[in-house]
Length: 126
Image (cartoon, rainbow, N blue to C red; front, side, top):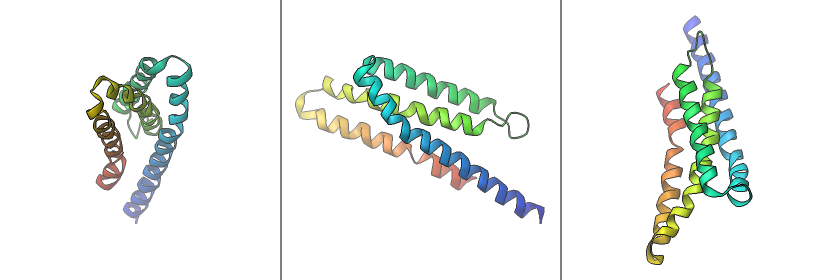
């Protein structure tokens, strides 16, 4: 029936979006690592990452599957910006006493890894 075809098409489309966004997420770690280490430090990486995430969220808000289908672009931008924010936050741990530095870094890494569950949860909801 047509409903089954639509569901299959929607699942394939979401798989494409998920694959594209995940690839952008994990490949941008290298780029932001270079930005932090060689081209401006954590502040610049954080600004670029936040700008990418904000742009991705704006594109996501404006996307519509019928008239302006920019969901892959939106999720790719969000995925690309995440590591910029994540990597730049490692320097926050240096603001704490030595006894708490490792705990703070572990918390930041755990929070970032936990944020990765957003894509599978969205897949489960759709």
